[in-house]
Amino acid sequence: MLFRSRQGQAQVDLVNQESAARNALRALKNAMGMMNKNKRFTVKDSEQPLRPIPKREEAYQLLAENNPVLLASKALITEAKINRKLSGALRLPVLTANVNYSASSDELSRFTAKLNESWRLNSNISLSLPLFTGFDASGKIQQARLVVRTRENEYATLHNDLIVQLEAVLELLRNYRQIIPINEEILTSAEEDQKL
Image (tube, rainbow, N blue to C red; front, side):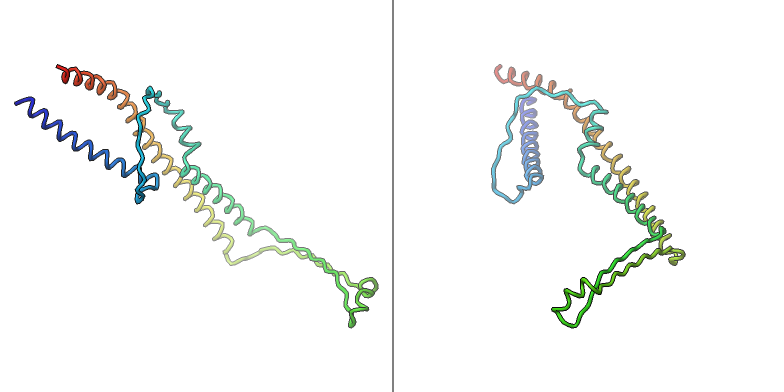
């Protein structure tokens, strides 16, 4: 009777594990962009020994250096800071200079001679000071500062979320480090029981 109940429970566990394996395969195909393709592939056991779990500091460094979302967020902060500096330039004076060289003639044949004889050179230098821009410059500077703060807050939130996820993955790896040898012992024991 006890054997029958254990066998029934093992069959239920097997059905659940097969279902979980199919779901994991679908998720893998989706992640690889192969969801609607009929390509078949197999996942092979590598028989490699377990690699050591990276230390927390090393994992943080790898995350900061390689996570594309985190790197993109850093780039957005840099862009916002550059835009803030550019908006501050609205209050700076503007210096412009123009130089013109020209000649004119009624006939085309005499035009080349006019270029050498009667030509005009005009130059113009102007300096404009933005004394009052209707608070437009102040508004753009304030807006640029707010964008920088927003980007920095988004980065901090994203960084903290990724650290929480990283901690969860490291904890899961530590758990599997303990579970795998236990499961190997159970498998060995089950194989011996099956022989008996």
